[in-house]
Amino acid sequence: MKKMILVLSISLFMIGCKSKSVTNSKVDNKTERVIKGNWSIANVSYPGSEFIKVNSFDIADSKCFVGSTWKFISNNNKGTMALTNASCTSFASDITWFINKEGQFVMKVLSAGDKAKRVRDGYVLNVANVTETSFQLVDKINVGGKMTDVIYQFQKN
Image (cartoon, rainbow, N blue to C red; front, side, top):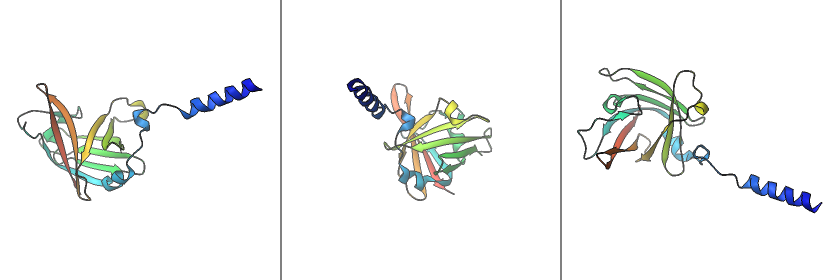
């Protein structure tokens, strides 16, 4: 009987101490609700490094994202994004996203037919300057050994 109680106690302890992965991070529901809706990228900038070329989200040159449209649905953390810049190749995709308690925007770009749980690669950017009508996503890239910000300025549609 004592062994059974000991085994049961150890089992309950192990269940209660499961490690958490990045995808199990608590979300910042307040910020997610502010960001929900239809947005477009008004500007992409690299403060102090205006002459670099950035391939954003492994899709296209960062300047092709100016004018792109984004839809964020906060109750299921899904959405869409589409490149609409006439001088660039068009692109559209479903996305999954959430904002964790550390203020990071976590996103996966989904190819046609992909389920989010099968997509292993994603992007983590910092969220900054959130208002009802605008916000920024800030990516960090390495340029010649120096970390540089890439700032995506979103405007509410």
